[in-house]
Length: 454
Image 1 (cartoon, rainbow, N blue to C red):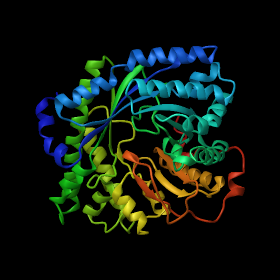
Image 2 (image 1 turned 90 degrees about the vertical axis):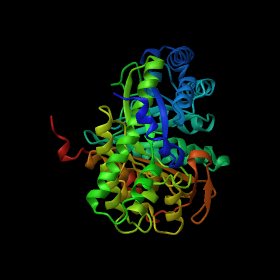
Image 3 (image 1 turned 90 degrees about the horizontal axis):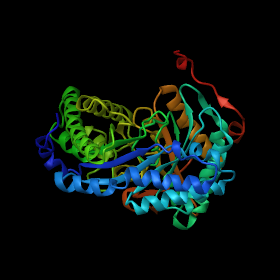
């Protein structure tokens, strides 16, 4: 049982250490919104989302005020739109019309982001998938709250290299389409491998077809809380270090469980999962890099960083699993460069490179996240980075992703400001050697041998 006393125990964490519930996300199935015309699809989507999540923002604000727990974002995730629009969309512009409808709805309902402008193409692309992917640059350029994701691989199916090649081109086109805002469209676009069906975090959130008609997923974050707890065990053994992280993660997850159950009761929507992810913000003291420093790493990227991150990620998961029966989504430590002041500092001084970040993604949640690169980086190079990260996910049976921003007009040494939770970032150098011949091959990279478990 969860009671208010457990939340009261965390008041210091909330007031001093940047503990928050990062998001309450309502996942909504739009499978019953398919129709023979785009207009009818948009009408059905508007009705379904309004009826299901019309009170989301108000309810989350009420819970936040009554319990004294900050709820930073209210979000909605929907069935991948490539599936919903397949019955009527015959060109990319048809999908853009759906994106505009979703964006208008998000604004009307007071929702920060709406995810699910997505396609799942790990084994191949339907014509609907291809049209949605082609529409992404325009859709993200003419909306402000829509998030897009494309799953290009999985451990069971391998990597769809045709989709990988296409996504390199789409990311470049999205950067160009939003060049007037420092290519900000790319901050709402992520390419995934092994994407989970129940992820509340953007930009990769969508409502999987295995999910119920509607569900509430909550994402909790508390890097500052973990850092503060570790300050009291400096110089102690690894055993003490690990126990401290687990106990702290347990307390953080209990706060999320309280909010999730209360939101579920008030909205009349089943509770799905708690995603305990240490998702940083640009605020000082709310950094995963600072946790690594507290563990003993001089600067994120220094030798030992990957081991320290593996330790952190594992203990966070262990503590979270003890606190809730339904831990899911991604759950672990995020390392988005632009959203973590410690990561920004490490990148600016040269301690942290894209190659080191790639190594770190082998042991943490998701992957190369919110990384700004020179605007003249070739599309084939972007595709090569996606392929590398997808391979890590495929072989290690984990979710990996790439959210990379080739900022038009910027080069190594420059910086870019996105604002808010998206923060700011230095333009990081990219390996100058190409991979065009590799990326130009067609077909799939087969699934690894350990995927055959049926």
